[in-house]
Amino acid sequence: MKLAIPRKAVPYLEVAPLAIILFFFFVVPMAMVLVASFFDYNMTGIIRTFTLSNYIDLLTSRTTLELYLETLKFALIVWAITAIPCGPIGSLWMYTRSWVEPAVPTGRTRPDKTNLSTDGSSPYLAN
Image (cartoon, rainbow, N blue to C red; front, top):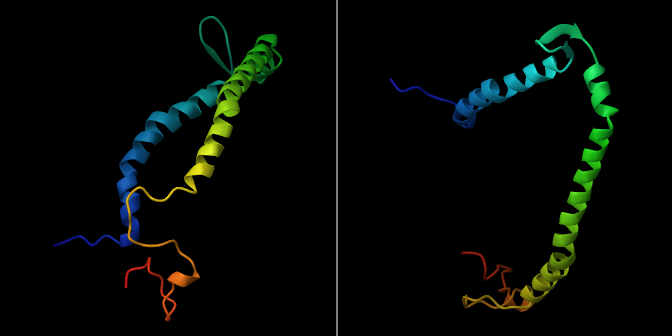
């Protein structure tokens, strides 16, 4: 007896093993970290009382602000290093490539109105 699987279910069944692994080894641990971030702590462990003090300390810390500014500075430096020379080079390359004929001759001419047959079919489409 052959099991009949609906055609629409096949992609979901193919992705299911990875989805299960990601759920247990990524989503569940991240949820636990998120929940634990709202608990208080001391030198010996976590105290299970809801608090926002962890986030208040993080967002009002001078160190956090300095780290965000350093990250922004390095992002702008990398953007400048890549965008300033690569923007014009890529633009020029694309402009020049649009005028170059294909390296491998196809035996076909450029598509224009003269390439259409009397029935309106294109020479680029298989008959």
